[in-house]
Image (cartoon, rainbow, N blue to C red; front, top):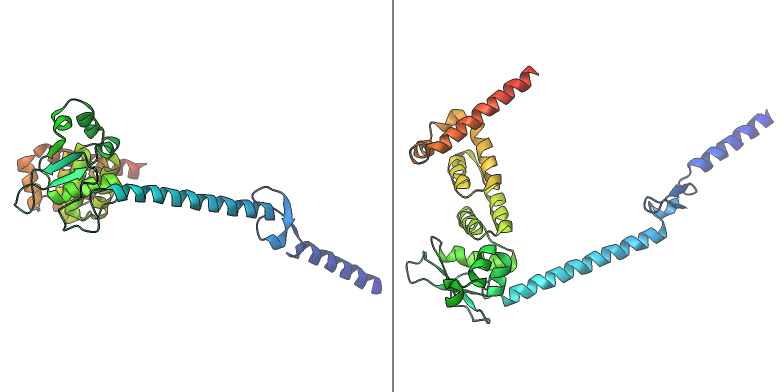
Length: 268
């Protein structure tokens, strides 16, 4: 009987030793070397290396922020004074003028630097690097745009930042498409898609089609084809039939295609 108890005690001791998390040998998930369980998931060397990598990433982020801050410093547009239309020269060498000023007064110039415009837009590059009128005069006239939108556009070229509402997003998207600033166009599309609803879907579909906004076009078309029973009851639909019936045909083609695919999926 005593021998049996000794055997059971020895077996219990061995079991406890195997499962005790304080004594169990484990393998590091980074370097695959054995380490003590108290090190909580990684060995000391990998833990220190991970900390060094994190610090290096923080330094890189701070460096990028400093570079962006430098560009903002040299921007002739002060983002903190939206109502102020007088800008210091800041060694600017090009002037942009909006043909449509929201105040109804004379067009107010927006100062900029050729180097920034050329680096951000291939269209500005073609204008300013070749012997075009804009290059010789140092003035770029931009039609069908408000002063506020032009100012926001130039500010984005310097800072990659824009304060958007739906109207401003539409105006900036038009400018981004015209001057081939792809990242701004994508930014505006994403914002407009986030504001998409049934009430504005038809209008936004026509807008997206006009300005080649593919992401926005797909989103609006999907919403319209999901609600086709409401389409013909809307004033926007009648305006679309009158102004651009080709788009109505495309909407119905997409709707029929979706119906066919849905039926095929059900049959399979």
